[in-house]
Structures are given as structure tokens and as C-alpha cells.
Amino acid sequence: MITVSNVSVQFGKRVLFNDVNLKFTSGNCYGIIGANGAGKSTFLRAISGDLDPTTGSIMLGPGERLSVLSQDHFKWDALTVMDTVMMGHTILWDIMKQREVLYAKEDFTNLRNWTVGMQKVMPPLC
Image (tube, rainbow, N blue to C red; front, side, top):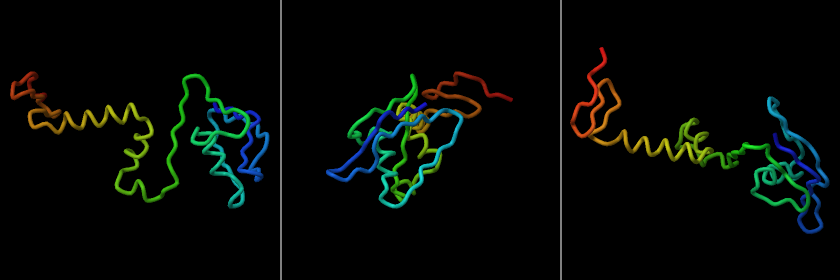
């Protein structure tokens, strides 16, 4: 759950939004709509922690985290969708990259007979 309490964002004298209060609850899908320049992306940047609101607070529920995919449409073209999403969970992404390094070693295989340093440790599965 994300709770937005009395959030305001302004740049100089320009107020994008003032005293916003809402709660994003689990199990629901939300959309933010508005005219260009209305502050949609700015609001999402505030929720993600990328921008500090002028006033108010944004809280995540206990044990929750938030991942954000930037609006740069071409930044992720070289990656699969799965890799792009997994990169949002940095701990899991690091573990997956370490696993790939292990699997790429010449003396390691995860197929029917698992070898380590050319010594068979498990008979083939039939």
C-alpha cells in the first residue's frame, strides 16, 4: 500500500498540485491522467522517491518496495522484457548475474550430469 498525505509540489511560484491525499491499496490498478504538463510524471517521481515533495509525505507499507521503469522508451531495447523487469529487484538481479557467470564456466554444466572440475558428482538421470 502507498499512502500519500498532504503532498504538494511546486517549482518557484508554479504549483503543480497541492495537499494531495490518497491511498493506493493492493489488488487494485490505478491510472494517472491529465493534460501535458499537469504534473503526472512529477507526481510519480515524488511517489518513487526520485523527487522530494515540497510538503507532505509518501509512505510504503511495511516490507514493501517500489520499482520504477524510466520513460526512456529506447533504453531497454537490447534487453528482454524479463531482464528489464528483474533489474528492478537489484538483489535478485545480482544473484541472477552471478548464476550466469557460474553457468558460463567451462567446467560447470547444469544438464543431466552435473560436473565440477571434471569430477562427476552425480550420475546421469535416465
